[in-house]
Structure formats: C-alpha cells, structure tokens
Length: 297
Image 1 (cartoon, helix red, strand yellow):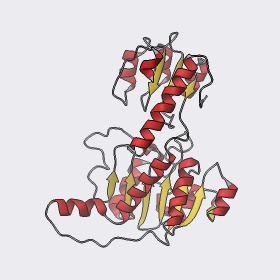
Image 2 (image 1 turned 90 degrees about the vertical axis):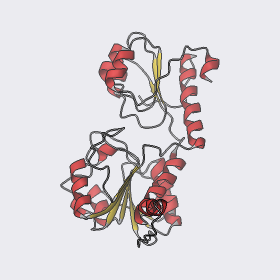
Image 3 (image 1 turned 180 degrees about the vertical axis):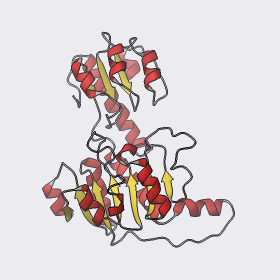
Image 4 (image 1 turned 60 degrees about the vertical axis):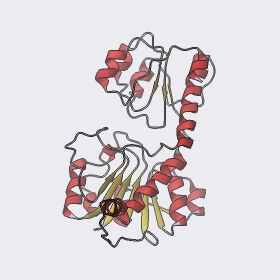
C-alpha cells in the first residue's frame, strides 16, 4: 500500500528513542510510528516539513499530543484492530501464571518431571481495570471460564455490564480488595501512572495475581517487586514493562513468580495485518486530502 502511494519510504526498526528520533527529525513529511518517542523536541525539530503522524496501534502515550496539537499536526491511530488478540493474550498470561506453565514447560524441556500443583480460575473474582474494547473482550472470555466479574473505569457500558453480570466499583482500591486476579487495560495518563502503588498494593488479597497488557508504568515498580518477593502476590504476568526493551538488570527479570512477554499482545498475523492496513490507510488518506479513519487529537 505504501509503495503504491508513491512515497519515498525510510525504514527504521523501533521502538526508537528520543535521541534517534532527533537525529531523523526534519527530513520527513509523515511518521508511521509504533512506540517511538515523539516528544515535543522531536515534533518541533520535525517542523515545518512534518504534516501528519500515523500511529500503528492504539497506545499514544509515547506521542506528545499537546505538542502535536499546538503545532496543528494531526495524530492518527487505529482503534478496534487488536482487542480480540490482546484479550486472548491476557488469558494466555493468566492461565500460564496460575498453572505455572512456563516453569513446568522448562522443567520438562530439561528432562525433568517435576509436577507442581496450580490453581483454577473458575469461581475466582476478576477485576478488570479499563472497560474499553479490550476490557470488554476480556470480560466475555472470563465469563466463559466461570469467573465473577467486577469492573473499574471511566467508560462504562451499562447494557454490556448487565448482559455479563459485571459489578461496577467506584475506585481502584475497591477493585483491588475484591480481586483474586486483577487485569489492567487502561491507557497510561498522568492519573493512571502508578495507579497501583506502595500505598494500595497491600489491599490485594494474599495470593492475588496481576495481569498487565496495558502499560508497565501503571504499577509502581518498587512496590510490585516487594509484593512479589514477600509472597503477598502469587504472580505477575505482563506483556509490557516500564523500559522496553528492559536492561539486563531489570528487577522483574528472573523472579520465579513473574512472566514477561516482549510486548506481543497484539502480534498475531490477523491483528498485524489489520493494524498495518489501518495505519497506512490513515496516512495515505490524509496525505491525499481525505478524512482518515480515526484521529486522536
């Protein structure tokens, strides 16, 4: 699709740091970006040539939306393309955590026959934080597994909640007190940064599990590590980290009750095709003077 548009295309393997983006900035009419750092400095150095930013995916926390708005640079994104895929990955992580699947598979790969007793999720309470498309897809699957559901978030679909018997709670603290498993699907904003922190993480039941397919910064790292090392949390299973890729000494790496995947929640052949097609269509439509599919600012 890009080749057919006639653009000159420069490819870089991301996610790109602010330093690398500043090296590139100024030479392009458009960015087709993933989780690359499009900070105010990058956007301002990209002017006056930059016309549009097209995001591959839905998370726009790496883009300074205010800076883009200040300089009349539209930010396009692709809502509705990966909610099924991320919801499935959420359950892959959840089941892997409660059944110790990674540990057990590694035992067997080493020629060992070590049998660990895990836990069921049927009958357990799942607190879903963030009730957009992904959170709702997780709820559908959780109901099929026989889980009890509570939800917390600014967006709330009353009809959906009634159909799936989901109780709404008014605070993150109430959600944490209720949950056997808490699954994070809210976007990263100043209000949600360190939403789970040293002051409230103790509200989780001893033996609770946290699943995070949102953003690593939603949890306060030091509080999370302490809760895992003390045994208060049974497990933490995440597709995201506060630093991606992480340094070799990242405190979560190597902990026995932690499962980390490398931000692949939306990486299925089906979802990648949807995201790529939508991001490119957004870009080419805008550059041709047509209305894009979705705009974030």
